[in-house]
Image (cartoon, rainbow, N blue to C red):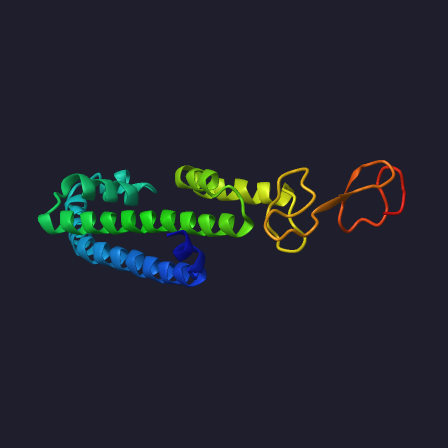
Length: 194
C-alpha cells in the first residue's frame, strides 16, 4: 500500500478532484435553483398580489422585505419527494467530496513523510484527525529538523551521518568538539579552521 502511495501522481489527482468538485457544486446549485426558482417566483407574485390589495403594503415594505420573502417562502413551502431527493443527493455528493479531500490530504502527507523519512505513523494519524492543521505543523517541524545535505531526509538531532545514505550530516570541531554543519569551514565557538 505504501509503495502505491509513493508512486501516485497527486498533482494529477488534485486536478481531477478540483474539476469534479466544480462540476458537482455547479450542477447541484443549478439543480436546486431550477427546482426552487419557479416556485419562488410564483410565491413572490402571489404575495405581491396579496400585499397590493391591502392598504398597509407600502408601510410594511422595508429594506428587509426581500429576506422576509425568502423566509416566508421556505416557511410556507413544503418539500416534495423530488426536492428531498435532490437535496439529499446534493448533500451526499458534497459529503463524498469532503471525504475524498480528506483522503487526498492524508495520501499527500504519507507520501511526503515517507520521502523525508519522518515518522509517517504519527503524522498520518495527526492528518487523519486534524487535516490541514497537521500539514501545517509538519511543514513547520520539517523546517526546523536537521536534514541530510545530500539526500534531504530528516535526521535525528545529534547524528553525524545520514541514516539513509551515509553522507555526513554534521561534523565536530577538532579543537573544542563543537558540533558544526558540514558546510562550515571554521568553528562557530573557537574560530579554529575545520
